[in-house]
Structures are given as structure tokens and as C-alpha cells.
Length: 220
Length: 220
DNA sequence: CGATCCGTTGAGGTGCGTCAACGGGAGTGG
DNA sequence: CCACTCCCGTTGACGCACCTCAACGGATCG
Image (tube, rainbow over all chains, first blue to last red; front, top):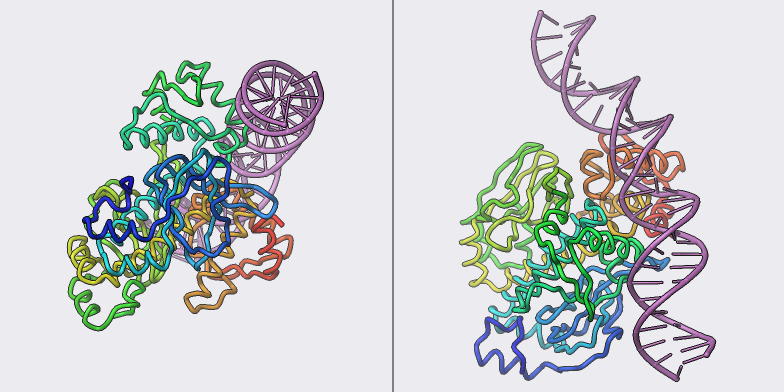
């Protein structure tokens, strides 16, 4: 079994119990794991690939609230129903924990609950950063912040921070940053022309002037 | 001692222990409780009044990430430092829990930790709604969503849902919705002219056409 | 080799921001 | 009691960052 972030703080006994209840599954790109409003009967942990979460308005406008990668969990729900849709961006593998069983485990192992709480706190902080981005940053600042987020996340997972792997489409990036695909594309071109980045094979972005990207992410 | 939302699920013994460590304080309007980057040495629970949380960009642009009222808690931190500034909107009373002591209590009383986790999950869901608002809604949709949020929150706390008490300034509303004060003002005027709302004495907004506000909040 | 999807680029429009002015209420001081 | 100032909300005129609509090229696939 792959090491799971949720489980990092657990002892062997707890891990064994967890392994008993999880189901691992492989999902190809572009598949819906669950939809907004579905009964929230499970918690998921991403062990490979990228997953996006999004909410829709009645007329189809979409806001992507997060891109999840290895170690992230999804499926926290409020009223026993999911508040967002989850869809794979790339092929992915996930661990599925039935909610009833995980609730029971949380009572039994406070350390696990604490770990989940800590992860939820981190997500809350990330959500607040994203609100600042959506409410107050310009298109260029949004794109630079986005690239930096991906870079820093890759570094934290032990991958190289540059070039950055950007598996999602322009449409997904736009719906994450509150822009249109055209504006995303134009802004990439601007940054390319300015010599701050260059686009490479395989959906990779080379940040050639990291300092400039840092400054532009915060409007300095 | 007033009943605290964090404590709703606790038994008398737990409540007594909690009462031992909390400090209650009265704070007037416009005071800063703590600033972004400060050492996060305490958790707070609002027992009266309204508090706003915000983040700043280097050039002064501001994003308010939430307005907290009675029962809400604040002070969750990631790296032992606060990720946002907290400031009172109206005069308020708060309970302050030193972090070290609350951490110890959480280990002792899993029910309390569970309650905090559940509140964090709710905040996460609210944050995702706010991202949809900031990234994809128009000014009119934002204002209508905001009024509905205040109305529903008042109802949940046992107050009447209409008229809605709006204690915050146009500038605060603007920084919460990703707009300018002028646009907030103009949009209120539009809604007033359309007969959907009317402004009353004492910072109250009467929603005269609730259905219209509902529809406009989601772009129907 | 047509069909589809995705990213890019251009031309033009617009919703909201910017800048400015004004009026009312609250606080202050004479 | 009356100036005077400050702050807040409102309104108008104008500009622009980003959206909309459209066209096109390359990649993938049957």
C-alpha cells in the first residue's frame, strides 16, 4: 500500500485497520467521481494523478475550487451531500473510504481525526488565498500566482520546482482563476514574450525569471 | 457563561474545564484583534458583534474573506502564525482560548475536536461558495447573494430573516465581494429602483421581493 | 482525409473601475 | 448655537481590462 498523507501520523495498528476498509481504484482522465448534490457516502484520497473540484451556476458558468494531487483528500461534506463535483484531469488512482467506517475510525483514533482537521485547516488557508486572488488580482497576477502555486506544490512533494507540469487545459485554468480561455492564452503569450516563461513539450512551463514571476504574482 | 457554539456537544465536565481557560473580553468597533503574520497564540470565539477577516496585497488592495458573528470561531492557523488580519466591525465580545491549552483539551476531549472539525468543514464549504461568487458572478448577483447570505444566517441564529441588518460599510462590502464602493452603491440603487429592496433606518435592508433576489443571486 | 478539440490571435464591445464632485450626518471647537 | 472638518454614501463622466465573437492552425482520431 502506498503511503497516504492522511495516515502519516498513524501507527501500524491504525494503518492495518485503515487498509481493511479502503478500496483502491484507477480512473481515466475526464471521469466524474461524484457530482454536486450526490449523497456523500465516501471520502477519497488521491494517490496518483490530478483531480479538479468545481461548482456550477444554473447557466453553466463554472468555478473550479481546487486541483488535487497525490496526498490530497476530497469528499468532506456538510449535509451528507457533496457541495461540488469532482472530475479527473489526468488518469488517477484513488483510495475510497466509506464514510460510515471512517467516522467510526475517527472516534477510535483521535490522531487520525487530528490529522484530517489539520488538513482541513490548510485547505481553509488555501481557500482564503484563492479568494484574494479571485477578488483582487489582475489577470497577469492570477497566472503568475497559479504557476507559483504549482511550482511550490511540486517542490513540497519532492519533485523539481521548475519546469512546472501543467496538466490542465486552458479552459480549466480559466475556470480556476475566474478568467476566460482567451485571456489565459494571451497572458501566457505576454509572459513568454517578456521572457519570464517558456512553454515546453508535454504541458510543461519553464519559469526562466522566477523573481519576475514572484513580483508579478503580488503586483510589486 | 454564554453558550458557545464550539461547546454545544460537550458535557458539564468538559464545559467546566473550558471555562477555566477562557478569557472574555469586550472590544469596541474598528479594533484589530490580530494581524496577518502575528504569532498564532490563541483561538477566539465571537459571542456578540461582528468581526471581519481580511488579507492584503503589498499595494494595499484588500480582500475580506469573511464576516463572523456570534458563535463563529477564528484563529485557525497553519504555521503558528495567522494567515489573515481580524478586526471588529461593530463592538464585540470574544472568548479567547490560549492555543496550548486548547490543544491539550482537544487531545483529552475528542468530541470537542470533532466539533471544531465540523465547523472547519462548514467554513470550507462557505469558502467554495465565495470562490464561485468572486470568480463567476456579476456585481448584481454578488450583492443579491450577499444579502441572502446575511438573511439566511440571521434566520439560522433565530433572528428574523427580513429586514436584514447590514452593519458593515460599503467599503467592507466591496472588499468582501471583489468590487468597489461605487459599484456596491450603484447596485444597491439599482435594486432599490427595481423595487426589490429598500434601505431602512439603522443599517437595515428590507427585501421586498425575496423571489427576485433569489433569482438574481444565481443569474436566473 | 474529414471531424473534432484545443490553443492562439484579432477586432470590437462592455461591465466595472477610476476620478471627481457633492450632500448629509457626526464629531469638534469656538 | 453655529461654523468647520471629516467620513461615508451617492451619483456622473469617462476609460480600460477583460469578455465576446470570430477565424485559423495544429494535433489527434476514426
